[in-house]
Image 1 (tube, rainbow, N blue to C red):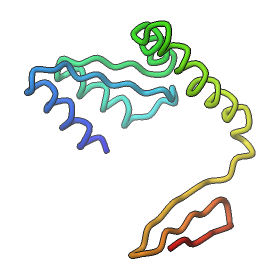
Image 2: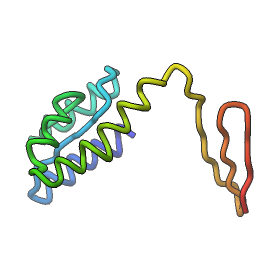
Image 3: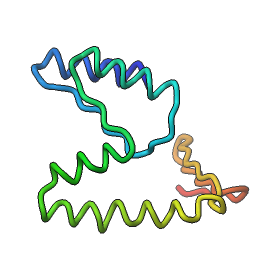
Length: 110
């Protein structure tokens, strides 16, 4: 992921755009630190955690700001309240079958 994203930052720069990294999850990681450094190297900006939310809200305007608050921020906050009880989810496609697994339970769809 970091290599692709780093390429994205350089592609943006080479195309005359300023790359902006927007990460809503504030969980620190070495990959995120490296990725933010790549965006910085390419003249970009990085917004992480509360800074990302603030950036979105500042740039959104009144109508889009309400949309972000109601349909993105509030549902994420509600899910986060229960994160200790959430089971892992995975979705995998194999040929013509899609497998959805939640915890220990799997369902297959054609």
